[in-house]
Amino acid sequence: MSPKELRTILQNNLDETLFQLNKLLSGQNLESVKPVLKRLGRNQALPHWYQQLKREHALPNLDGKTIGSIIEMLFVSVLETFTYRSYEVSNLTINPAKGVDIPELELGIKSPSENFCTSEPFFSAYERLLGNEYDAVILLTDYQTAKKKPPLKIKIINWQYLKGSQIADRNLCRVAKIHREWLFNENRAQAKKVLRFLAYINQQDWQAKHLLKMIEVLNDEKGIINRIEAAIKHYHNSNLKNEKAGKELIPIDALNTISRIKKISPLYLGVIQAADDWVINTHKDFARIPNDNEWNRYLSSPLDGMIGMSFALQWRYHFASVFKT
Image 1 (cartoon, one colour):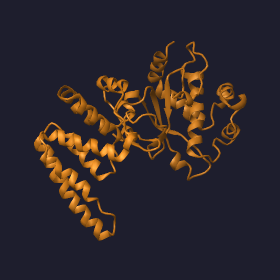
Image 2 (tube, rainbow, N blue to C red):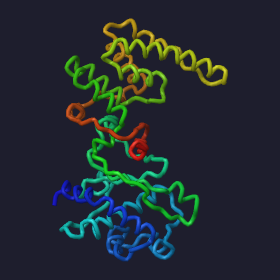
Image 3 (cartoon, helix red, strand yellow):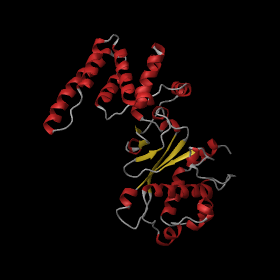
Image 4 (cartoon, rainbow, N blue to C red):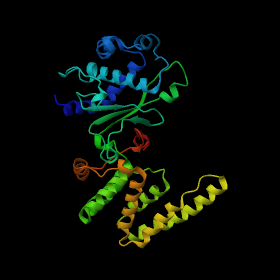
């Protein structure tokens, strides 16, 4: 069976699969998956936590990353012994080094806790809009609560299946989608600059945050002017508060950059130029224009991101919007 067919079977049986996973996490039915765990274990041996989980129905006191690895092993065990038991499926493996957790399914597994966050390797800033190449099962655990009440009894409290394109920034995809068609037809070079800004933006930066608000209304000159004036007002109010509190002031250069946009016609070009200057000044040579593959993927992408993504040395994925509806 193809990876796509196997993923469809999983989607159709996801609730029951996760019910079985929670049984394993509570120490039940572990004998049934013992052969799979041995095969997946280091040196073909049972994992070090197996006996305690079976005996005490609780895991050793472990860090969140290790808990994530345990969940992966148990999840694969359920797939082999339950979800795919009626199908001819070869042995599954766990191999994140290949860029995907379960290569045979072309499927990722992400297990955030109640803070809704995970950190993932960083490959390209454009993942923020284009998403992952692979679908993923998001398994929300109660680890943050459970670790405060030993012994460590973990369970999956919610779950979602996300397509690869959905593992992208929800708000930035929304903005990119609004402007993709008209800006592509108007000026492709400018469209690429907007895409680069959305990929590399730091939304904690005052100037970048207000430029994003202007890009939201990029084809509405009155809207741009209103947001420029709102930014100027916010600058002065914020610096008054910062000065009283003894905090660092927002640089005057940021205000001047925003103010100068009003002198450029058409206004949307002024916004794009200011946004592009921010990218270059902030990231230097690191912030590259999208390559041909990324650009073509962007043009055909559904831009249906569902999560929050902030970017540093690694991606910080925020899954709150998936589970809090």
